[in-house]
Length: 583
Image (cartoon, rainbow, N blue to C red; front, top):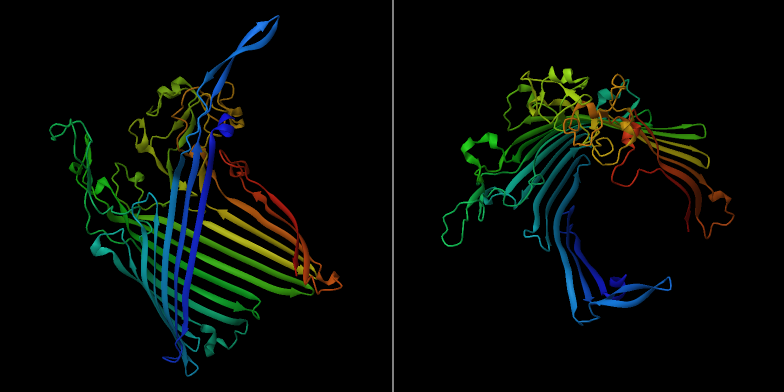
């Protein structure tokens, strides 16, 4: 309270400045179909605090008892009231972004059938921020060349010449080309016979190689560097024991990680355009992802005391993602009922196709497994007795007792340790392998019902937060009620309780796994159009009322886990009643 009323004051100042200017020119007098656009923009934000910091006195009462009544007899004073009159500036911060693009575009049709389009674009931006040494810069040249014959055969080339300051000087530029082909097969004569239900059908194919620095973690990682004031020995006289140590090696040949992508698909309209279908197969291979891996170099490239390393960052890891996506939209009038149904879905799989790794046992290799896989131990239930512990492999994760989790010895060496971790299943960090979304719109006269739902299937999670892993003097949740005891050993679903750390039990294993499969009714809304009830529409052009809800329902085998938040705001269901009017 004293600080609030007598400690001075603090004023926070924040200012934003934005500027944008461009040119839009039609160059048809030079060449019909030629246009030019450009834009230059500046975004500047700054903030700081101004304060006066005052000193103030505080007092301690000295209490005495007079005639049975407690009274303050005196005060002890600490400090003095003082105002320096000095204004302090602190917490200064700024961020500046400068962006530019210029575009030449050309679009022309010759002979009513030959359509040509082209674009040449240059764009870039640079962002600087206080207390961040290196500015974030981006510069690219882009080229588009497109041709289609009678909107039946399509060929498109798109290329980007990219630049990145995160790479060595000789490898900071690269070309990213893509080629797309399409065939509107529904325009062919042979499709007109006996296929009247097809209104439009197009087959598509595309392939490209994309160079990107989005996965490069920082600037200058291609450079090796040394540190001083490191370990306990040195050769610099007169200033104590200073050491110069290497932290990583140079890699002047570091290059862009590449994404090689292939897409095959179709798009079509059927049954008098009431049914729209599309589907695509995709394959994306990420190659040359940058890592710093000791297994790629001789052991003498590193030392553990003093800590030193000559291992550079290199392009090595490869990942593969394959899958399909599909969509359907159906629209039909059933008497006075207007029905619209939509369905969209994606199924994909991931694989680590190349990894720098050395393991003693083949089952430990991450290469060939899902990128987002869960690795851990396989459980064999609970230890039933001390004899059971004595007859089992040695547990290396701490002392165990009856009621602790027993694990499978994968390699048969008689010891349970990290070498017994195996692939347990696909995790949900990048989303479920199969995702499906559905929407339904029903309109009858003035009443409209809209529903949207989404399902996610095929992934697993681990119950590893403080709600499930409880020990010591932390709060215990209701999951421990069926803990292991001598009386419940036949039916227990939770390990024994302990005031210790229980390192053996609380580690990633299939004991704590659960399926994340779920189906969510994400949105439902009922709308009634009241516009026709208005006698005069000069002021109010349209009026409707609605009631809606979000996150209404979750159907899952593990609702109690999926709807539980620990250490954050709880999940909510939201309901809304509203009026929408146009004037």
